[in-house]
Structures are given as structure tokens and as C-alpha cells.
Image 1 (tube, one colour):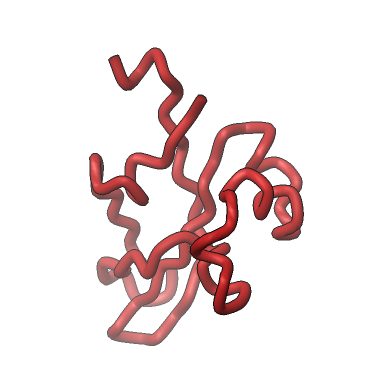
Image 2 (cartoon, one colour):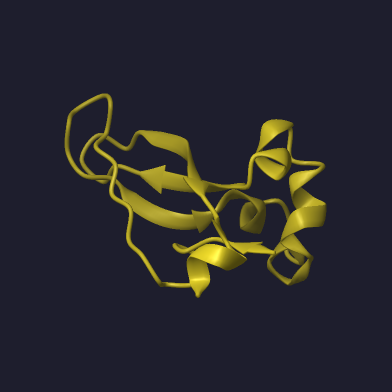
Length: 87
């Protein structure tokens, strides 16, 4: 079993915008933007259909990040924690 530490508010991850160098804001997991019901669907199931074939296999959670300065959007992959790391 694995879980995203950012989705579960256990850890913050900051990324600098590659365009302007300012800190980007985490807007949540990418799958929440697919449709109105996506936040209520099993995350692992959505990972199989999101167009990123490695995220399910490698235990990564794709998040949308946004720079408020230059309006650049980017998808960053957050490493999920497995059950051993949670103990």
C-alpha cells in the first residue's frame, strides 16, 4: 500500500518554475481535473488511464503546479510513501 504525502498533507514539496524561477503553487493531483467526479474515484484506477504509464508502476502521484508570476503550469511527480515508510 502506498500513499501520496502531499495529498495527505504529511509533507510539502516545493518546485521552482522553470520559466521564471519563482516558487510554484501545488494545485492538487492531476486526476482531480479530469471531470467532476474524478476526486471521488480510486486514484490507482485513474493512474492507469491518465496518459502517464509509469506513475502507477513506480508509485508516483502526478500533481499540477502553477506559477502565479508567469502563469506557467507544470506536472510534477511526487514519490508516494509505502507502508514501511509510514511506520
